[in-house]
Image: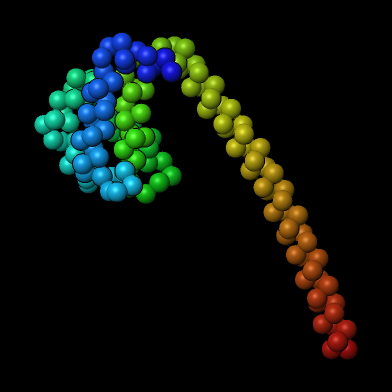
Length: 145
């Protein structure tokens, strides 16, 4: 929320929309770009001018791509990319870093607990399967008697 207010105050919102429009010209019908099309779009003079004005350099762009492509193939969502561009505007404060650290820790804990529950569930399923196999072996032995 605060980011959007700041971007409007600085007059940057139209630039983000122009960037979105440029990227959409290279996108598929669903608003996604392959890495190759993304590279083509972001090397156009218009896109470079906007990215320079927004102070998003190649390193920032690659960081954004790395974030967006985690767990995905090679397709980039145009809207998601533009939203991340807005988030990297400016420098990170200590508060931003601490919030991020806290969020990462919370997600790590949540993931740990979910994995522990999944492991327990799988263990129960395996134990049940072993019991079923033992019963089948006993039945087979009784039938072959």
